[in-house]
Length: 308
Image (cartoon, rainbow, N blue to C red; front, side, top):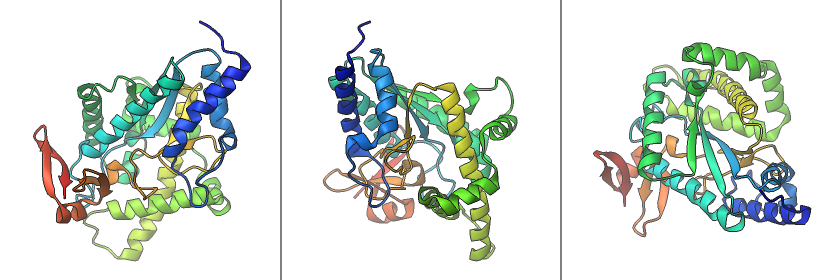
């Protein structure tokens, strides 16, 4: 294996980063920093380029579908996930043009780690993950692999696995509350997750204010578990380029990445469904809006998306 020179490492690393930047999921006012602003990512990439190994990206996400049928088509992956997987695989392919050893993407499905906080059963999350892996095989996305809570801690049940990962890696809730008060990016995450939890709740019979209070409480639990999941991934895959489906400021340990070219920085395929416009452009919308605007398309016998 040939070892690259320092100048080649630097040039190649920046070239790879430039391929990521157009797809960056960022916070308002942080949309066009120069490559040198991404020190952690440059260092993570350089560790692979220096030794000529394929780059490993780790991406927490693809947890499960929202339990609210007004938002999604059903509990299994559909056109939104299919298009997202295609994007991730093609991104790895494009990287091969500037770095021949290429790249691979490890999708770290995080549904089980906080399923109890979002109201989705482990069996439903398992079904989502099984279909996601089948979709990767059917679509021949050879640069993609998956990892989830079932891959660690042996034969323990999910409840015990959640408890152990939380105990080892999650911050105390008081410390997390202080982070929300002190750090704007964490505050945005807290507000975004609270909004998702409110929207994902179907059939609530109490008052709106009571639902808001309950979702604010659960949002802290979701963030605790998300941080714990990131800690576990960092331990399992310490040499990886860490990605996130949430907006990330330049210079943070993770690089926020958009799975689809949409304006909303928070919408994901698992909180929405796809509507293809007349020109073929896909957009992510809540199910009730897509249904009002388009005609349902089925794929493999299941609802896939709408065309309008």
